[in-house]
Figure (spheres, rainbow, N blue to C red):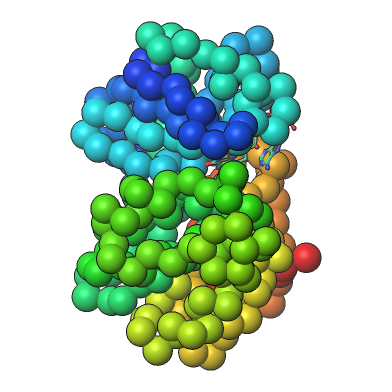
Length: 250
Ligand SMILES: Cc1cc2nc3c(=O)[nH]c(=O)nc-3n(C[C@H](O)[C@H](O)[C@H](O)COP(=O)(O)OP(=O)(O)OC[C@H]3O[C@@H](n4cnc5c(N)ncnc54)[C@H](O)[C@@H]3O)c2cc1C
């Protein structure tokens, strides 16, 4: 089975930072199929279009999903109660490719950080660099410290960790890394890709507004570079993870 829709039971819904919610949902049939860097598409009661959310963590029975309230859909999700049933389409997209024996660095910014937790768990001796606007938005640091002893934190205003951007840390540590996996806002991904260029391989996870999540509606079309020239791909199906060299960062 590639992907399917199932009812998941909401086991936990906790606000872990201002406007950021941490869900645990249970459905053994689909949870065990999920791979790092993939996402799910959530049916919000009363709304037609589903909301895509990355898989923050997974085990045989449950998925962890961490989301920020942005508009109506995520607001409704934040108000759901433990015990509620949630209709979820999963697992979707191509995630990060993690090979044994390579030294990976996981670089995340803001609400792009959650999918890097499950991904870091797949790597041998991972390094993790996360960045946030300020200390009130910092999430998942203890979770990362449980899987890595090389966890670096940066904030734009210096209110937690080092005062600066994730790329300031990355530049200093490039010789300790074979490959980077990054997720965050486009300007951050562009800067990370520039630091890695011609030095280490880099995979980036893109976020694009999407409708169906399975490549049928074509809302998330995205122009990419290939050896043959430019090509249109779909973030939901061909992505969300791409080789950093394939992406136009506009
Ligand atoms: C592959 C993928 C993974 C994502 N993972 C996460 C995550 O782990 N945590 C998290 O907080 N957010 C994540 N997002 C963004 C999240 O999907 C949007 O913030 C959310 O859909 C907004 O819905 P809304 O109803 O609250 O906002 P509204 O702006 O009211 O939404 C209106 C419509 O626009 C769509 N939409 C709005 N913003 C986005 C967006 N950035 N991307 C895609 N569709 C959007 C919604 O699906 C909805 O149909 C991800 C997006 C993608 C594409």
